[in-house]
Structure formats: C-alpha cells, structure tokens
Length: 627
DNA sequence: GTAGGGTTAG
Image 1 (cartoon, rainbow, N blue to C red):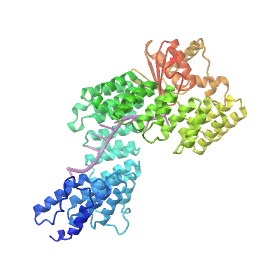
Image 2 (cartoon, rainbow, N blue to C red):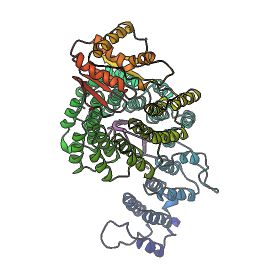
Image 3 (cartoon, chains in turn yellow, red):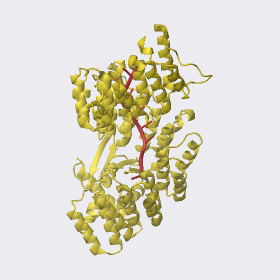
Image 4 (spheres, rainbow, N blue to C red):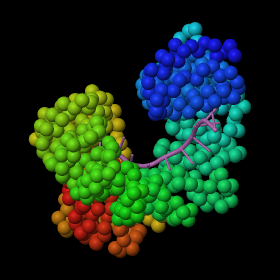
C-alpha cells in the first residue's frame, strides 16, 4: 500500500480547486487511498471516466498531478498510456509538448507510452519528429531508455512517413517490420502499402500488395486510392476491374465497399472516362451502394469531369437534403462552375449557406464559377464576404477575374497587397491578363517575376512575345525568342484524348502514331477547307517558333485537339456528341475551329481543358468566349 | 482497447 502513501489532502485540495474536471454538482472529495483491491479498481475507473472530459491544458496538468500524487503514474500502465494518448492527440498546441514531458519523466516507459507519443507526433503538424523519437533523439538527455517497438509503433511511424512523403523512411520501416516478424499483420502491411503509395513509390506499393497472401478490402482500397491519386489513374481502373470481375469469389473481408467506389470514381473523373464511370456506377448499384452519400458525392464529381453535367446534377438531387454534406455541395457547385453555369453555382451556394458553413473549397468553386461566367461583381462580392482565410488560389481566381475584365490596376494591387507570397501561377495569370489587354509594362514585370521564381515554360515566353508583337516591337520579339533558345525552355507537350466505344485514343500535337493517322489528316484537310467557307482563317499568333507563316499554320492545324475531333468525326455516326479531353488549356485557334465544326457538321463537341468545359453547339461555345 | 483504405481545389 506504499504507493498510495504519497497522496496528501493538501495536493488533493490543490487539484480539486483547479476546476473543470467535475462534470456537475457540488465538489466531491478526492478519493482517499483505497484500502482494498476493489477500491483501487473503482478509483482507476473513476479516473478513466474523467479522461474523455479533459479538453484544456490546465485540465491535463491537473490530471497529470492527480496521477502523480495517487501513484498511478508509475503503477497503472494502462491508465498512464491512455492519458498520454489523450494529450498527445489533443489539438491544443501545448498538449503534445506536455505529453513528451510526461514521457520523459517516466523512468522505464513501456511500448504503449512510446506509441501514444508516436501517434501524436505522426498526426501533428511536424510528423518528422516521430522519427527523431524513434531514433531516441527527441528527448533531451537524460532520457529514458526506449522500449521495444511493436506493430503499432511501426503503424504510427508509417503514417508519419506517408504524411511527409518520405520514401526512404518508409523503406526503412518496411525493413524493421520484416525484422520484427510482423510482416503478416494485414493492418500493418495495409498501412505500408498506403505509405509507399503516398510517398509516390507506386511500384513498391504494388509489389507489397502482390506479395501479400492475405488481404482485406482496406488493402485493395489503399492501393486503388494510391494509384488514383498518384500518377496512375489508368492502373487504378485496371485494379478496380480485377476486383469487380472476381468479387463473388473473394472472401467477405475483401468485398468492395463504398471506399472502393469513391477511389475508383476519382480515377474515372481524372481520366474523363464516362464509360468506366458508368461501369463503376452500375457496380455500385449492384452492391446497393449507390445511395451512400459519399459515393454520390464522388458520382457528382465523376459525371461532371466526364462532361455530363446533367447526370452530375441528377445524382446530386437524388441525395436527400438532410443527407447532403459540405462535400456534396462543393462537388455540385464545382460541377456547375466547370461547365460555365456561374449563376447556378451562386444560387446553390446561397442555398447551402443557410444551413452548412462553406469552407475554402466552396469559396474557390464559387469564385471559379464567377470567373468562368464573367460575373465580376458577384465574384468580388463573394470574395469580400469570405468567412475563411483566403489562400493563394482564392487570390488567383480574383486576379484572373479582374485581369480578364481589364481591371489590371486592381488585379496588380491585389497581388501586391495580399498577405501571401505570389506564386508562379499567379504571375502567369497576370501575364495572361497583360497579354489579353496588350499592356507591355505589366507583361515585362510578370515575366521578370516568373524568371525569379524559376518558371521556364514555353507558354510564358509566348505570352510575352505576343505582347511585343501586338505593339510591333519586333526587336523585343526576337530577344524573347533568343532567350527562349538559350534557356533550354521546358515545353509542356499538349495532348488530347477521346473515348470511342470505350477505347481511349490519345493524340499528341502533330503526331502520326494513330493507326488511322492518314485518314485523320485527310479528314482534317477536308474540315479546314469546309470551315474556310464559313470564314475561318488560322490564328497563328499563338505559335512562337522560328518558322515561316505557312509552317506556323501547319503546327496549328495539327494541334492534338483538332486531331481528336477529326478522328471523332470519322469514327462516330453523324449527330453523335464528340467528347475530347485536353491536358492544357485549349488554344484560341482550336476554339474557333471547334465552333465552326459544330456548325458545319451539326455536332455537339464537348472539350474538357485543364480547368473547365467548353460545349460547342451550332457555332457557339458555352464559355461565351470568356475563358 | 490501442492501427489500415475515401470524395471536393487557380
């Protein structure tokens, strides 16, 4: 009973008057030293019941004192570890340091103590500190000897290496996991797959997955989501098909669930593959998951990114109002914005604001919608009314909005007065605005800033050169071209793809890789002569090469989106909608050509560029030429 | 009892 001896009435009183721990009612006396095992158990149980109610640092300290004075800190490892867990995961910035202080005060910490601290560090804003703790370097000497690690310790450490995309550390932890003999632990190895994927090492993630003899659905989902969010949405869909085609033979623990659907739908959206998206939707229906709110949110996003705003909105409206979440609204607003329906996006934003607090994503989607629809005043009004701190993307939208509207001074002032450093995209936005309105000084300033920030892409040079060209400053045009030649400029290759009968066809500018390239080029020549009758003249100012006018026309004529449209025209029956996806923004000439083709051939053409959709119909585009 | 997988972003 020695261990109860350190508690005194004095310390108990001091703690009691610290306030805050009692849920209600009059002050209850601190428990006196229990004299029986039953009383001790009751005392521990009482303390346990207080744990979930600890919310502030003074309360943590008070509880800490209580553990100290009662002796439980040294004697009751379970209670101590749960307390450590509680403070290590507390959002309060002073809580985690206190947890480490506590850990350091324990003469012989056990694995659970270490794990609590690791878990807290892994979830903190500085996950790398968990590696310092593992290396025994976080706790200043004299620090307690580290206990043996277990599967949980590695799980938290892998979470940390995933959060900081630290592939070498994930590899090291993989080795430790094998040495520790826990390589058959499904949960741990799933975390490993996830960690490899989030570090960008998709090959290792796949290898670990393939070598597992026992998996469950989370393992599949970890790899699927990793591929989808990494650089391999195509492989994600291959994996999904492998799962979906054999799911009836899989054990129940591997049955696909709503997480599987959201990850797969994300891949479909990135690829713009309506065919795959449709397949995933049908599969979700088959499993009875198509009314799950998160699945619906992903469906809204998928349909919108695959060019079908109507289906996106159908799914959104099928979600019962009380089931709609912030993400449901964000996805729907984003869908309307991308498709140029800024007014509808604003109305949906107003509707949601009455009962769901918008976040940064909501505001960005609405602002983007205002931008694409040319709703300058609405955009500025929404921006000024923002109830969250704007980030550089919000400023970017506003700068674009003002710049396109010709309000260049305001756009520039916004950049100079914002409380964040301007990034490359922001200066590119200003450069684009300067080009649009032919303002040389601003273009030069933006180009200088871009060079300072290390941007070296061909688009920057083309814009600057075009500004000079518009003022007939040919010497400067030549100078830009020389700089471009000397600087080893990075050219972002433009490519487009289109889905015909469920098969994706990819085209790169001027490429002849497609098996039917000769037919496609002939069709394009025919198209050009036909739309020339409607007044088409190539807009060659977007080409900056040291080549003659005729060659410029050639370079322009075989832009990837034109190849994709031409192929669509010859590969589909008359009247069918053509859908094209481009990795960059559509160029001005292709935009004119698409409008004329839609009229001359009576086709609806939907083009998704890097930021939005253009729907061409009867000679007009849904963007109203404001993009 | 303690751990794993998810959707929205210029």
